[in-house]
Image 1: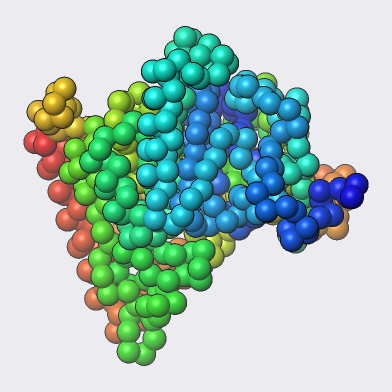
Image 2: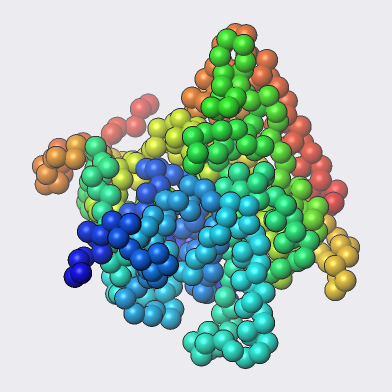
Length: 135
Length: 332
C-alpha cells in the first residue's frame, strides 16, 4: 500500500480522509514565497495542466518593462514574478489562454503565442521587430 | 491591518494563496477575481464557497487549490457557512481558546478575514435566503458574488442575473425567440437595502478599484457584499484571450458601472446616512452595441428583427447610469 497519492483513484481513498495543502503546518501562508512552501502531493500546485495548451506563451526579456499586467491578469498563477521583476512562465500551470499576450503593452510584445511543439529559442529567433506607428 | 498597495509592482510582491493547475477553463475571470481578492490582504483568510465552477474545479478529489482554510457545504448556504465560522471564531476569541499563532497575529492587528465566494446562481437565486439571513443578522464577513450571468457549471442555464436577449440553454435564441426575456436583477441595491454597511460593484479588469474596495470592505464591521463581473469564455462564448477586453467593454459602456454604497449606521443599526460613490467614470461612454458585439451569446440580436432589443438595452443602461449619477449627486 505504498502507492503514490497521484496514482490512487478517488475510490481507493478512505472516505473522510484528510487531504492537506502542505506536508507540515504553515502558520502564515501569505508571508511564505511559493518556492519555499512545503507543498503536499495533494496540492494542485504539484500537478500539471500543461497538456491543455495548443499554443504556448513565450517570454522575451529584451522588450519587457516589468509592468506586471500579465501577472495581475493571469488566471492561472503562471506568471513567475519575483522582486517586481517578470522572470518567465510556469508551463506546468499555463493553460494557454493568451490573456498575458493580449494585455502586454510593449511594442513589439514581450510575450507572444507560439505553437506548443516549437522550441523556445527558435521562437525567440522569430520575434517580430518594432512596428512603426501609422501616420 | 491594511496592506499598502500603491501600484501594480508593489501588488506583484504578493504571495498567491490560491494555486495553479486547478481545472477552471483557460481565461476564466473567476480565478482573476479570487487572486485579486486574496492578494488584497496579508491577513489570514477563511474562505467558503457555494457550489459552482469555482468549487468543483478547485477541490477535485484528492486535490485542493486552496492554501487558506476553505469550506464548502452546499449550493444554498455559502453565506451561512462563513457566518457560522465567523461566529465560532468570535466565541473562541472571547474564551481565549484560539491557537497561539492566531493570538499573536491578532495582537499585531492582523485579524482573520472571512470571505464567501459564490456564483450568480448561488447568490441571486439559490443562495439568496441564506445570504439575506446572514446580512440581516449582521455577521462580520465579506460575500463576493462572481457574476457570470449564467449557470455555467451545469451547462449554461439562465439565472435571474442573465440579462435580456442572452441566448442560454434554457432560453435559446431562434426563429421564435430572441433569448432571455427578463431584465437583470439589481442585486447591489437589494443587498444595500439590507442595511449592509458596505456594498460595491467591481470588475477584474480594473484591479486597483477592486483591491481598494475589498480593503475597504475588510475594514468595515458588518456584512459586506461585492458584486464582481466575471466574463465567462464558455457561456459568453468569446475567445479566452478576450476576457479582459470584454470586461473592459462592460465597464466603458456603463453596462457594468463601478460604484459603491456606504450605509453609515449608529450602534442600534439605524442608518442615518447613505452615500453612493461612482468610482470610475468612462471618459467616452461607448455604445452598448460594442459590448454586445464582443459576445457571441448576443449575436442573434444583430439580425434586423431583433434590433429593438439592442435599443432597449441602450435605454436600460442609460437609465441606470443616469439614476446612479442622480443618487450620487443627491447623496442618498
